[in-house]
Structure formats: C-alpha cells, structure tokens
Image 1: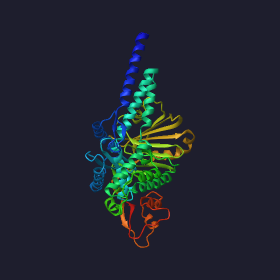
Image 2 (image 1 turned 180 degrees about the vertical axis):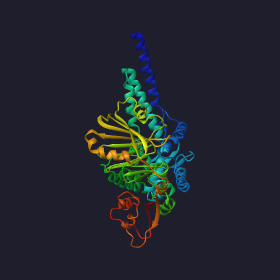
Image 3 (image 1 turned 120 degrees about the vertical axis):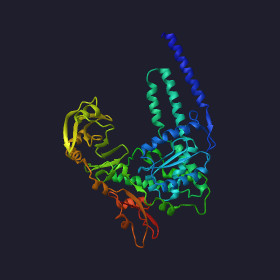
Image 4 (image 1 turned 120 degrees about the horizontal axis):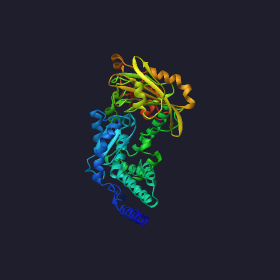
Length: 492
C-alpha cells in the first residue's frame, strides 16, 4: 500500500470514528424511573430482555442453581411482585430467583431478572430488610443501569478505536481492557440512584423505608465477623455484596431522606412472618457441594474427605475448594474435567500441566488409590511461588487434584503440613457419608431468662458462636434477645 493510499484510508477511518462517536453522543433516552436523560444508545429495551434471558442459566451455574424450596421461592416472588408493580415498569415481566449459595449477594442483570442468594436471606433481619434489597435491585432495572453501563463501555471502545486509528498499533486493545475493568460494577451515582428508587418502592408498598440502612448495618457486622473468622484485614471476597454494590450506611441514609417517601404511621417490618417463612432453610454449604467442617472438607454424595493444615481458611465453590493462609499460601482442590486411563505421571506432565517443566514427578499411593505428584516454580502476580501438583485416581471415571502454591520463604516450613493434606484424601464409607448433615436455620421463641450465651452454645458454627448468633439476629453490642421474641439459630 502506498503512503498516499494509507493516509487516505486513515483519514476515512478517522472520519467514520468521529461520525459514529457524534451519533452515539446524541443518542440519549428519557429514563423511565427518573425522567432524566440517560445514555443508552447501544442497548435497547428488547436487547436488555434478550441478554437477561441469555445470562440467566450462566448465573444459575455460577451460584449453585436455584434454591429448591418452593415456600421460600414463592415468598420472595410475592414480595418482588408487589414492589415491581409499583415501579415505573409495572408491565415488565420480572423474574425473582433465590440462588442456592451462602455468599451474601444480590444482582439484577438486564431484562428484569433479579437474584438474591439464600445467604443474603439468612442475614436479613425481617421482611422489610429483604424487601429493601429486592427494591434496590428493581431500581437498577427501572433506571436501566445495565444499558447505561454497556453503552458507556461501547462508547469508550469507540474512543479507543479512534485513538488506534490515529496512532496505529495496539493501543486500542489495552485501553478497551481498562475501560471494561472500570465499568465492571455500578458507579457510586448509580448505586445512590438505585437506593432512591428502592426507598420509593418500599414506601409505596408500605414497608419501613429505614430497612435498607438496617440491612447495611447487618452487612457491616457480618463482614467484620467474616474477616475475624478468616483472620484477614478487611478485604472481602470478590463476589460478596460489598464488592458488587459499593455503598455506605451514610449514603443509604442520605438516599432514604432524599427519596421523599411518605412517612407511614405503622410501616411494615414483618419480622415474625419472615422468620416463620425461613424456618428450616439451609445455612452454609449445600449437601450437593460438600461441607466445610473446621479444617476438614467432606462430600457425602461424592464420598471423599480431606483436611487442610491449621491456619488455612477454606472457601467452598461450585467448581473447586480453595484454602488460603494469611502468609500467601493457597490450596486448590478440584476434579479433572475428563477421565484419564493412562499413567497418572503422564497425566500430570502432559494433560494437567502441558508445556510446564515439572521436576520430581513420581507415582505414589494414597489410602489405596493410585496417585502422582510433581513440582515446579511459577510466577504469579510478579512473585515466584513453589507449585506442587497431586492427582488421584478415585475411580475409572473420576480424577481429583490438589494444587499447592507456597511463597518460596514458606515452602519448607509448610512442607510437612501440606504432605499431611496430600495423604489425608480418602474415600468415605456409606455410614460416614450418612452421618454428614447440612446446617439449617431454626426459629425459636426466647423464654424468660434466656440470654445470648444460652443460644450461642447450640450454634453449629465453627467458632465465634456467640458472635454468629448476635450477627444473624441483628443484636447490638450490649443488646440481649427480648423475652417472647423469635430468634434464628443454626443447627445440624
């Protein structure tokens, strides 16, 4: 291509990019919830519904599927239906789903799909608090925040394409990644707007509009407890409500005051109704995902168990179990995606870690099972770690695996403990599996003279029993449960 033709093509590309950018900037719509102009040029309402339906099965897979309790599901759907009917989109076919996950979270992708986890339901103190979370998510839908976020991302990519046309090279791809990362969660302004709208819907249905701030205070206490259990310094998990909905109690209170919702003489809280509906609900790990029992993990359906060393905190996901130590060591346990009938030493070298030079690869036997191990060094986040891989042939159809990652200055100190974890993996008998029971929430009335310590003794939590009881029941630092009131307990 001649210099003249290249220059002409570049001028054409630049002109096209400017035209597309100008067209996009002029494509604003009237927001149905606020009446203000918002930029949604690149996602129509029909497209929102199509994307919501497309993402629905993916969200179910990520969060353990639908929580299979018709009473709880119906209860949430009825509350969601009442709130959506008083929104600015009463004719939108909303879908309300309780996810089978103990992660405390809620979300509202495009198209009227609203999700809350059973972990969030368990943390809520009453019906009004749960309704406040649902109303907030409906606010994201009616304000078309997903369409705004997507359109802003496309616009950012148009801008970076323009930059690439001007300077050439790979600038656009790097900038596009940055834009996508920046727009990966709702902005502070969008969260505030969803709070304003949520308070509006709560008031219209007759709920106490202060319930949204009350739930956020519960969430503060829960997060502090989780940090204490994990021995961490306040950094939460990527999928919790703090990470996906960055809000503060002060901003929620400000939104509540600014919403102008009518002050009701007798607003609904619905605590007793709420507690009766969730009585018997699963708490923590689901049976089909296995159980964390202190340092032990046991799966009754798949019939295996193992133990991690002291100081590691386990997180049970849908695809893997991850245990972390505050010194940076990580244990990842999962199942191989496909069966493998050849030697496990070959599997470790060629199937699991192709292209990586493994040292000290050897076949071993663990509790009657064929296994193999090898080690290498990897660079992760700019640092070098020792990586040890262990694969087990549980049966002809199933392989299980451990990946141990240790900072170099911790490898020798942890070597014996991690070796014990390697050899702790074993099959469970039918009798052992039958003894594994899920934890559930039970609701009881407070008898005269009963205090928090009396209930705490019965809490089936791994440590911090009194604190778990207080957090789940929304009790302040010096507050005791009131005689005759209903409280939540966690039992097996």
